[in-house]
Length: 411
Ligand code: NIG
Ligand code: FE
Image (tube, rainbow, N blue to C red; front, side, top):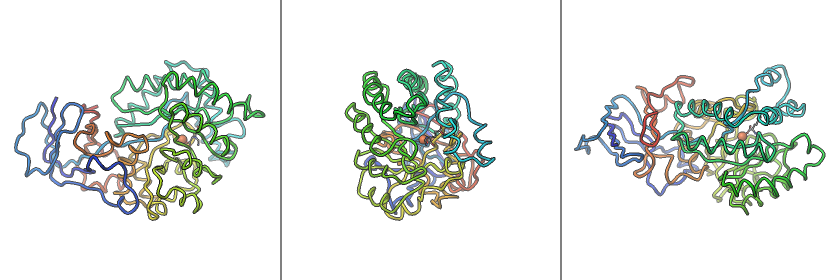
């Protein structure tokens, strides 16, 4: 199946195959072609260029994109889409004055979701997660990372990872899977934290690796959750079993998690709301992608990742949703891009780079996703008739997407 788009108002985020991530001052650049064409052959981008270079209009499907822009689909590198039920009562508790940490200390939070998930069937979890996945695909997401972490027993963690695997084979969207058994300490291990770390390292990781259920390993490294030493031990074991680290750090406190991420050669360090200068410095010159989660900051009313400072000091930055029932019940990457501009003072170019090619890097897939590049997947957002791509963050809350193509097929 061959598709030709012609008269594209602006073709956005065109890159060479050699570009795997964008950092520092370069994030302000977003290469585009005005009045362009784009050819798709089966799943892949075959060719693109200026309309003046288009000679042959032959294709199975020819689309006049006059007035519409085309950009690569969003790459959401951090989500917890598989969960049972919602936590809107905690939302109301927070409005009434309790903090996220206070709610967790009362047995709410992650443990609340774990209790619900342990009692639900794989089929039920799949059906709920499918709805969320279909929603985010319509909102322009073409690749997504999904974590476990609401199971907290070997059986339930494997149940979650099996759901992620079934999602990956049931939908065209690219899915990367992360084992996050170290999301919180289960109640029965409250007084025996090292016992739970042992269970993760000696039972969960070997079993999950044997079943080939995860690409990445994650830990919530935070005061009241996993400390730096426990984090290091879990990541080290994960790596021994072929799982690449991607970790939750510095959401509420700076306790050395970024340093552990760098030392463990993590693919990404995520959250970063609370950053000391030393946390920023240690990331410089490394291959680790910092990931900000602006809608989590928005929803919890906690500080935003200091994106301006990170980028101005030369670092790359990716942005992702963190879609989960507790801290971010939204998987809308368009809102993430808007919030990055409005609250973190990123330019539209920086935010689009952060949500596409840098998000792809944070999932280890920037050779196939995240830009308009010959040979990459034809994962495309066609916008409505809007004045310019600046409108995407500017008109926050409006759906500006006309069509989404994933791997060469309109969804
Ligand atoms: O990334 N911070 C840790 N984990 C999730 C929230 C999990 C939850 O509250 O259910 C996050 O924000
Ligand atoms: Fe998260």
